[in-house]
Length: 270
Image (cartoon, rainbow, N blue to C red; front, side):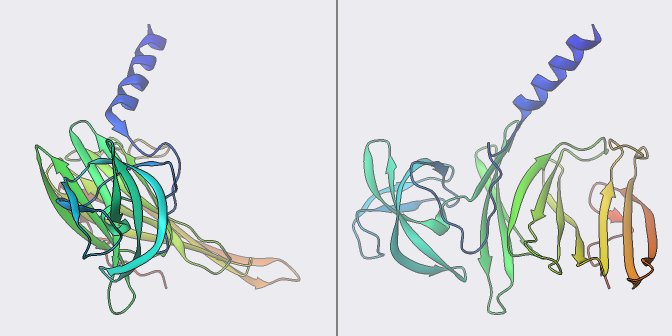
């Protein structure tokens, strides 16, 4: 009986939460691949005969429209601070062009809510995540400044937290020692998205490292109704004798449905 309940639980979980079938790392240089099925991030997208703004409009496409990528063109246009390529695409039996910046780079779904993602940049070259939430035949956009240049996105359940439906986790990729990585946490309460915290980690050739992360109630060593913030730091004092210093910092946090108490959004990893 317990096995049957476990199997049913897993089936319901997979039916409820949908994410990309493969891990996709996104950056301002991200390119869509030929023969891939994608979905539009923008609404009323002008589907054109040629890859330029003066071309004839074939149709207007709505947000979340399914498209098939035929190929990337060499034609580009600056959009929201990012250089974007035009793509030749197929919609139903029609072939034309749309700008890559109008196509969602990630698509996540839970129950009757869909999340679409794109990026933008500003004059300081900061990178931002644009999130469009589609629910009840309407959509709303949220924007968050990111702490890394390349990342993947995942959708999790509420990890046994009250007043929370799901969490979006931006997972940063560090390709070399001394490069900061970590995670950005965005909570969804079925009405609004909340940017909770940016937790970073770094390892510098064995000489210095730090890691900060959350332990949720659902996790091993988790505490009911609380989020544990943990930060571990290690420094090499003397290589010859392998003298290392380690420190651990922990805090118990409470999610009240709108923010963490205490609020860690401005935490610094000095």
